[in-house]
Length: 203
Image 1: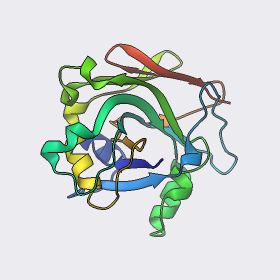
Image 2 (image 1 turned 90 degrees about the horizontal axis):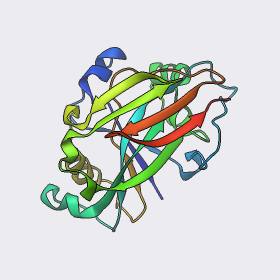
Image 3 (image 1 turned 30 degrees about the vertical axis):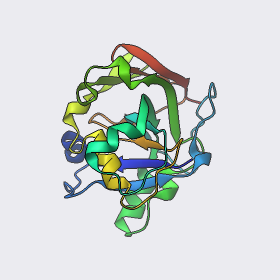
Image 4 (image 1 turned 135 degrees about the vertical axis):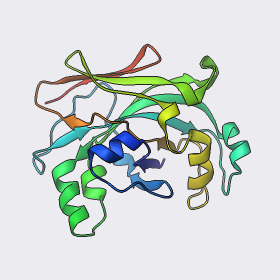
């Protein structure tokens, strides 16, 4: 299983981190060891003082594909979900400044929260999904997939130019504005179209 992540896919998030707007999707990968086991708390690693939450809509690939045409991309997934791309922001900033890869800041153990999956047939328009992240009961991130610079099918077509997509691969489609720091004893929960798809405690 590959975890393929898209960075800088919401304009307001690009602005809040003072990044340049990309001309094509920014792609990075998390190892499968980054997946936080179900029902497990997230433990803040000792190598970072600034772990940020980034809530994202997820797509699970259901068959093998390479060089997928965008008009057929919808046939490569049947489920959508919600998750968190945890980021060691202080470490990422240091790595970016030095022109180095982000993996240590993005792919550490537990850095990928994957919630429950829902059939995409539950939704009339995947390009209009409301989602949000709640920190201790307060909404801290709120987005809609209509705000994506590149929509789900475009991302699948783009990514498949470089990587063969396989059954079970997961695409993290990017985060909206509002990313922020987590603290010990925080409680996070994610909601997609009114349904809570994950919740976890921070230790």
